[in-house]
Image (cartoon, rainbow, N blue to C red; front, side, top):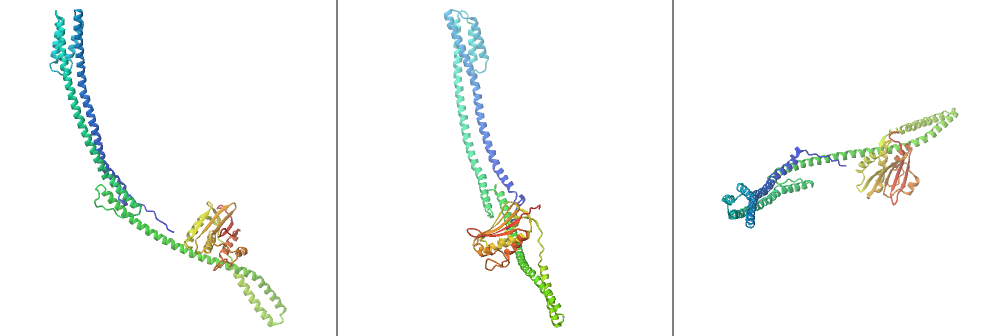
Length: 498
């Protein structure tokens, strides 16, 4: 039987491997994660700058478009007034006043791109103010000034759009180059991350697989990446510590197994001595029966000789001889009585017994005494706790198991110990798949010194029978099919509280 001691390894014993792994992962991930975050922030900043610049460029363009629109409205108003003057022959003063107000707003408005645009607008306003006798001439002069401003502003607007297009193309080119560069940096970071993190973790996984296979070889620290060097050294420290603990555990296991084997052998010797004592007790029981049967005839012979001595009192020689015989009979009677007194056996005390535990302990001990080809099995129906003589029960079951093993011999076989409680009866049985009991043995029954196998003493079953008889139970011997024997003990079931 082997008893292994559990081995626990503290963080101090192995150099904090979990902390080393955590530090490795953190050191490996910190810089790449920071760079990836920086790249992400830079990309977002680039897109934000492009969007902001586009909006910034669109503001002046929208403002200038509004100016061009107002100039077009002013030109249309002047054309309408010119047509109205040609058709109706006069110009409405109210509309002239409104048009001059619009021109004042254009002159005051920001967004004119042409430097002399305000001068032309001022000329148009002056022409409107001095219509005089020939309003048509003044309207045409004002219209001409506004057309000049509109033409120049449209040309300036086109130049502004071209410049915006060029600026946007340049910005998009720079952004595209930046994205390509950032993507390349990301790929390089992934490759670096694989080299600095994934490969070391793969190496760690390989080391742990070796450790799981109880391979305590040290990992080489040559050509090891500096980031995994502390972890490799911690692993080597762990391996050294585990190797020492494995050796210590092996020594402890071997020592403990040897101690258990020695204790088991001593227990088996005690069981054999107990069996010998049981055999002597059985022989003493047989002698006691014989002595009991001899005591009555000896008493009768002593009484008859006493009567003959009375009748022969006159014959001195005969009386002396009769006295010698009577004395010898008294001595023999004393020996017989002494033999009866010595054969009285003190019954074993009744104690609370867990049947399953008794059977398991017994099978563990017997395992060292029978061939390895024989399989031992226990079939205990639930937890059975009762009151009975524990040592006598153990000895009885031991005798039955050893008898079954002797019957199987060197062949492969199986021995099963069964226990079950039903009502007020406890059934214990030991069965095997050996040759079974001889027919004449089953017919004649159990008696001391009668055996069904060669070399047997005939006392094993007799000892078991005496235990069953003392417990007011009964014993049954049967053969099982297709082959094998079964000894069934039916005992009164006394619960733990009985």
